Amino acid sequence: MVMNLSRPTLPFVLLLTFASIFLHSKPILAQEVEDQKEFNYISGSEKGPERWGELHEEWADCKKGDLQSPIDLLNKRVEVVTNLGKLKRSYKPSNATLKNRGHDIMLQWNGDAGSIEINGTEFELRQLHWHSPSEHTINGNRFDLEAHLVHVSADNRIAVIGVMYDIGRSDSLLSELEEKIRSLAGNKTQENVGVVDPRHVKIGGIKYYRYLGSLTTPPCTEGVIWTINRKIMTVSREQVTALREAVHDHAEKNARPLQPINHRKIYLFSPRHRPQGQSNN
Image (cartoon, rainbow, N blue to C red; front, side, top):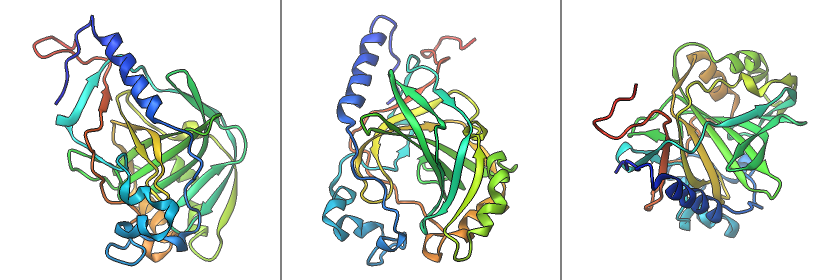
């Protein structure tokens, strides 16, 4: 249900919101698994999503966790708030390497590519990777592509920005990388791409969803602060095809199934939101 927060109680409620997210977020010692042979996305297979939590003891969260990602961002479960603040991105160009991890294509920055700030904590940008189709959905609608920008704080907390795309005009960053991505379709596992500016990841709009979840690949560690851009961007069909053809066969569709919300709070930052009956002008 959407909550209309009155002005006198809003700061206090938001304080509790921030406290809840940061108290339940935690240092994440187990990073995403790099070796694609460890798991796959084939439903019903021995290494498929339903079995991830049984493959290794340290992957138990994939099966038993209560804060798993991805989820459906359903309007009736979202609380609209106005004071989360605009997403503060302070990115800068840095040398990067494009890697074929078998289950996805990852762009890893080798130097200081800048950071984002969430509730006064700085999270440094480390890498970007893509899932096709999208992992998160909005009101049950799945999109053609989802990019994850992964950030890490000084105390090893993880914050991920998710950007979803529908087929349409080409994405500018993928246009820069498309030739290099195609070169990874064979046996080559990585390609130096020189300086890449993360500011070329177009987000558009200022509305975003915020919730506490997990990594979407094993070990599915929980405590990840998710920020999902509300505006749907566009990507060309050829760019999605290039990403799919570069990875191994079983990962051409590399989206984890939706996970239970389990009464989690999902917030939508909308600076112009007004209670029903009031103008947005």
